[in-house]
Image (cartoon, rainbow, N blue to C red; front, side, top):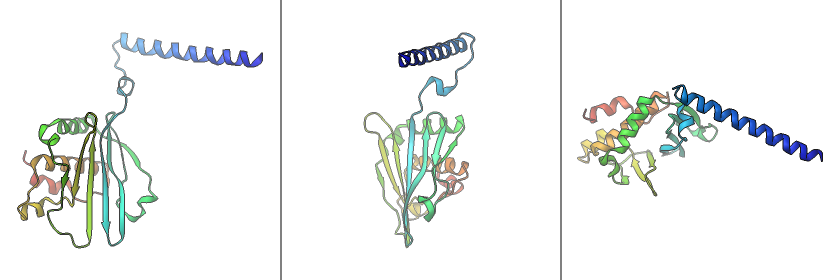
Length: 195
């Protein structure tokens, strides 16, 4: 019979916790206090970008940037051969940075970007690729960007669309703001994005 009383005690503890949580949330709502964003809506993936580096030293794939709706991000900070030893780092971006990304991803010209942008030049001993995944409806949008280098694209008369430049430069700026190594600087991007 003692197991019955333990089960009953657990039930009572869970019931008390549920009542306290409900009372606290209702009290916050009635007093006009805002609930934290995490209590109001679930954390969802906004965008995921993986980078693949290939060269004479081998091939490495890592999390370039994973952005969530609650402003949290995940990424590998370094781009190196030791990537398999390094864990994904958690971080946070500002509400303004998240709003910028959300606004950009909602644009029709970004939604209509082709799925692949091949290299606009022939690299000698190193390739890098950004694989972007943006959840949209049932399937989502995927963009593969090979050897992003706006100067070479322009020089070879194969300039990138404005929407791609905005998207790539924005995620590069976000990554740099998190003190992570980037393959192409956000400062160099500014020369190719019109205001």
